[in-house]
Image (cartoon, one colour):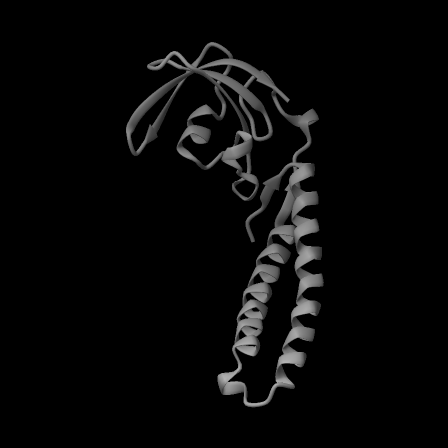
Amino acid sequence: MDKLYVSEDGLVKLKEELAACKARRMEVAAIIEHARGFGDLRENADYHAAKEEQAMLHARIRDLEDKVARAVTIDDQEIDTSKVYLGATVRVLNKKTKKEFSYTLVSPVEADMEHGKISVRSPVGEALLGKSVGEVAVANVPAGAIEFEVLDITR
């Protein structure tokens, strides 16, 4: 069983989603019971939709329970913060476009591009890991190689 490194905030979010899914599971069970009262289940769209949702919820719950069980939170005190690490916020300069970007490197389960959170397993995340301020990371993305200069590393 592989460890899943997550931030404290990421673990809280996983646990909250798990609790919400479990609560929804009870609601779906009630919907299924109610839909059974409508008679013939072969042509009961409400029943079939609820059963499908129930199956998807069970799969998501199993997935979340697995992730929570494997989760190991990161302790910033034990990390060399002079290099890019899981949980760090990194300000970089795209050497080609001369544009600056800020990314927070997170585990794959916490990745959220809308909020600047990239997975350490993404091409950019992998390229940045272990780099120090002033170093250049080369990310091999589908569009080609992109060079990023590390400008700043923060928690």
